[in-house]
Length: 467
Image (cartoon, rainbow, N blue to C red; front, side, top):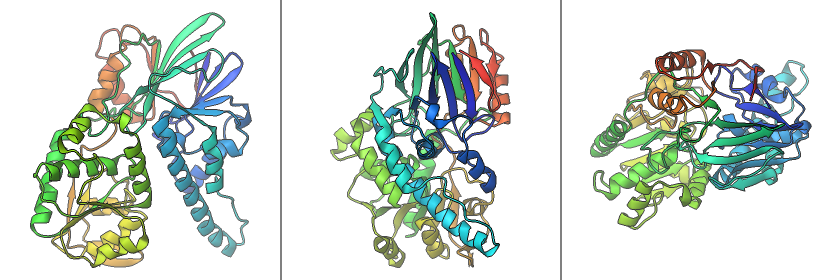
């Protein structure tokens, strides 16, 4: 039984791990690596193994850094099943198609530049058609349902509380009479987050080997309830001065959390009812999938639905816009409203138009609710720069900018420590993945202060472990 780390090794994207057992090969995750454009293309294009040699794939959740290279795997010869939860399969369907569209668009733009330089054209990593050919490979499994993806492996999905359908994967492995219980965390969610159940920890499952993410191993998150209160205050102040709240938000997870919060705040009378618009085709499609999978909701959400007698992600003030015309019409309205739109880092999509059309009015608020990468428009807004360039034009910012931390869907340092501690005294090793070196070092330092902790590893790409 051998585990090889093929991705998310000393970095936070491109999750990919290969389990070899009984002469078969099981791929755990098949995510896209995200980094500098040239390096990213070559890295994602080529696998360190023959895709046709993979017998089965297991996906923990639908985020692109965990599932996004599946169409390329199929394109290059994979013919087996892809196992995931029901909700993950449905989200992956729309996310992979959206990703295929982006790859096609980006390559079309790139090839125009290459043609001017006399360079040959390049092919997209994969297309929408490739994404459509991938979806039939999926086999949906419920949480807690055991399945056998390859000989000698029994697996089941355990609720991870990160996004809809997200899961840790518990494996019972057997080869030549040797048995090992292996737990992969996927991305670990946060307790007390709206809509979804809390993540289940591996303690009590007699785990021999734990492989877990360490994205925020170097810092705790702000208190989530304090973040909710701050959200209420910022929105309330903006509505009072009859402004618009413009919120860049990721289409899957963050958008639905904000919709539920606004539903709760307006239903309880804590905020006045003003129009709320979700204006992103992908976010609209993702929200529809969230509504189709209420089995993933937590008890608090069910109590809310029961008390107010309407759905968690639908209420009178809410509109999911579908057409470009509906989106453009929002620019001509002067009444208080809330617009949630993508992309999350304000680099593309309809959010650019909403920022451009509302940045001049001091009554408005641009509300930043997630981490913004350096050199993005979102970061420049978060840094409160006064002059902003959008579509090549300069705009002077008079709108207020507010930032709220604490809404991350990833576990912070405290929960990561608790997660690893739960297997102290039983696990033989802990493997840290999906994190930068600083995050891993800080988490290892914290864990080293505890008794009965097993050896902790932070592997590089292509490092191998015997299971």
